[in-house]
Length: 176
Image 1 (cartoon, rainbow, N blue to C red):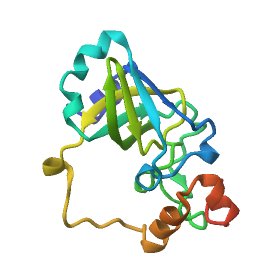
Image 2 (image 1 turned 180 degrees about the vertical axis):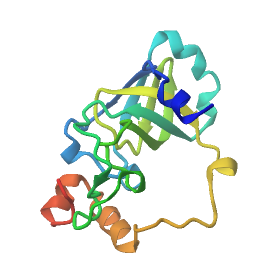
Image 3 (image 1 turned 120 degrees about the vertical axis):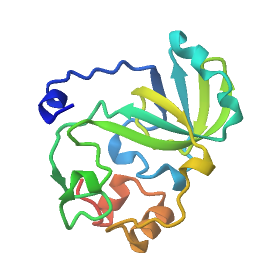
Image 4 (image 1 turned 135 degrees about the vertical axis):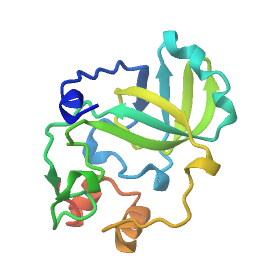
């Protein structure tokens, strides 16, 4: 397949469900769920519920979702963690990107039919869910990882404050 073949493709996804959370504004949504135990639920549409078979045996899930409130698609953006310097969009996790697709790892707490109860939810209420994948430690964990420009100061800030973009902005640490 050539570049022109790929560029000519029309790729369409349909949501498989809705993510519900206590977060209604991106300014108040945790930047990384791992440091904030915020609860949430996933409502998987009935026509996809059969696909949840055996999911209760996992403790963590990858959620892929559509950033439905993204307002742009800049290739260069100042990240939430460092509002001083613009960086390439593919080296940050900002929601304004060419394809507004998000990914989060959440903790699976319970399964009730087509409803999944989760925690570590850093996703806006009403977000369209595109896919669910199980987190498998033996496949997904990496020992030797470089995290680019993200340093311990950034991690400490988020961990200490369970940081939201608003909290970082108030501390002059974000670009919102």
